Length: 595
Image (cartoon, rainbow, N blue to C red; front, top):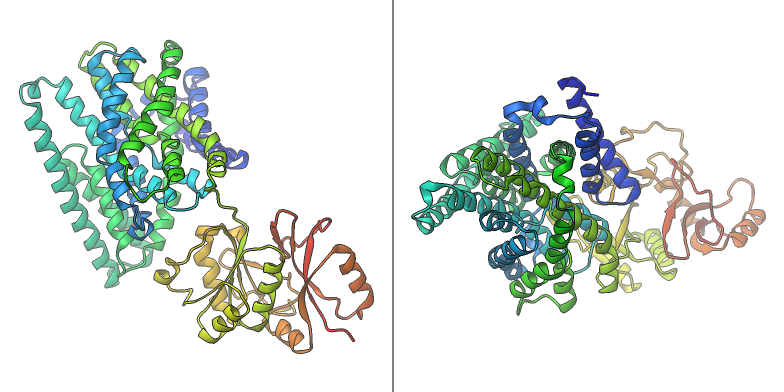
């Protein structure tokens, strides 16, 4: 059954989105479900036919989408993340690709059974890792130390390097015009790429900063104009040296991420949403192009080739690139065992396979199945092994801690109760006196303006899973929750209710503020008054809570703040969800003073 082109476009978006949602629900890498859904919709059930839908614009559209993904990846690269690991990253994206290219080409020739020219091209294609897999994987595992930053930087920076290397190998090996001077061609191409990438990226980044800093662009046009600048930088760099556009837009993203003149949060949020849609569509489209005979012909060779990449080549590359670096042995081992491939390998291999077939090169049909087998195999292995491996190496982070905004008297009292029951707590306040009092009580506390983007960047949030905003200023609480929703997820940011009795109207729409603590039973004023009358935060068992409530007057029974499970998992009492299961948990309550 074949749908109309318009229906197929709609199906691509629907299938891609549902596959990513299912991956989130199942806690599995989304690429596995995306490729599986694409193969099912394409070669198995023949629902999708990308060539029929997109025609000649298929691969230009794929390239443009990859450029947007690479720009968004660049926006997430901040130099402050590296903290001494910059040398390791530099070697992983320079020496690493050369070593990986050589070893992978040998494996492609003698394990995958490819002809030598095609093996050399395959080796160049597979030096990449992949931010489309690495970033979600790191968000799920959150390994401690510099390993996460190194993997993120390598995955984003090496993608344009790998794409460029693959194109240069293609032109140098398969194009007769360069057959007599491959060295000159290589040096000239790399020089053009570096020059055009840096120049156009810098110009685009600085122009964007100038426009936004001088308020020359209205808010509703910030994202469209940024997207237009990305397209302009890509086209300009690509016109000087083919395939250098990916390098240029990645550098432009890094420039915007590391400048301090304008806030790029709205751009980051828009690009993250766009990235999610594009990744879903790209993997569905590229997987649907595969043919069943291509997939099944050399399955054993492809599996063995993938295993060689995982077990031998990646560890050798990391060992050489990180030798004598500041990374620990366990961090180096983790880097050696995490290197999934992603959208760049899949998309570039699809484009080059078409060009090889058009040029009449023999065995061109081997390229895409081998690359997709590597993508699937590495995502499956690393996706399943990343979390257990981090735990085994002692790099895993248990994310159950609480960040408390506000370090006044009763916020400190609450923090002490949480810490006494094994919960990690970090207090933040702009009042140095409050912070001094917190530190005297043995609490971890930092003086800072939490609403400052630059100051928030220096926070160490290892192990932090929740934000609770306890300041008397509802606007500050709301803005803090709004800023942290991106990092901690909207289900893990909380604030006090602005109206203590619950009778007032919410002053902001529900999607902007955090979840309201205590339900609508207690705001800052009510808690402050109760503390003044002798109320206190304390940790009780369910039996003690039941006894306490039986002994108290009917008009004030105490208020449940949260529960702490046996594994130190904290669940907060909110207006939206409340707390229904307290068995076996420690219950933190605001208990009124005895009569």
